[in-house]
Image (tube, rainbow, N blue to C red):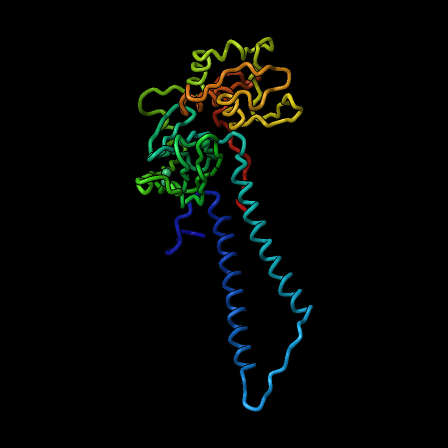
Amino acid sequence: MGNTPFWPESASNWAASVDGLYIFLVLVSLVMCALIFGAVAFLSAKYRRKPGVEPVQIEGSHVLEITWSVLPMFFFFAFFLGGALIYFHERTPPQGATEVYVVAKQWMWKLEHPEGQREINMLHVPLGQDVKLIMTSMDTIHSFYVPAFRIKQDVLPGRYSILWFRATQAGTYHLFCAEYCGTQHSGMIGSVVVQPPAEYQEWLNGGSSNTPLAQTGEKAFAELGCVTCHRSDSQGRGPMLTGIYGKPVVLEDGRSVMVDENYLRESILDPGAKIVAGYKPVMPTFQGIISEEQLAALVAYVKSLTPAAGAPGSSVAQTAAPEKTGK
Ligand code: CUA
């Protein structure tokens, strides 16, 4: 759907599929409406009471009932299928996406880029590149909503919500909070600025010198003493962290969990929740000790520990992700 009057701007890879599903929903609803009200009008005229005609009892028809139950079912399943496909696609970020940490609080959006740039109520993103949002809240439930991108995701305290998009059109777009979060909820607004890659790079390079997020995390890792147990050899009291991100890990009870942002987060704030097989629950909690920003830096640092490339910060997107088209 282009940028036509009465239709919101479309500026991301999601716009076509979300609009398509929406239009399909509206069309099916219109057709069903027309059929039902048409039948009501037609039948009440045809079978209206006429002088001299006695009403007759009409018995049910199985064929008719099955037809009008089964046929719409396929359409309604199509709603579900379309919605589910978009949902899972939206929540499965492609490899190599630029990762932006989003912290919502009453009443502002705080954003941090992997290169260390921080923004408030403003998010700069490169045109045509995948951007993954790792979002959490410091207080109540907020919702990250960019209508032009057709994305909306609740941002919850105590966990990360993940979402990704690829901007398809340069420009500045509204960012709203779409969950009532207190008296100034309506003021919790901002902008998403989509820039061509070169311009975006220029923006990244500008301003005061920034420390990459993973590097900030590395520093915190040392200062908080994490490094004494999580050693880079396997002799530490805690598991080795190199290369664990994105892979499953076996727990004491035999279960296996995927090491993602939420697992890292939980393991820092509530270390006893999921103990890796072969280790003891000796790690202290960092709940209330570190800020959301420090937590994001630590998570970014652990993610950057790749065995081959090695260098912190190597999680930063370099390669173009495989082409994905909306469906
Ligand atoms: Cu934050 Cu509404």
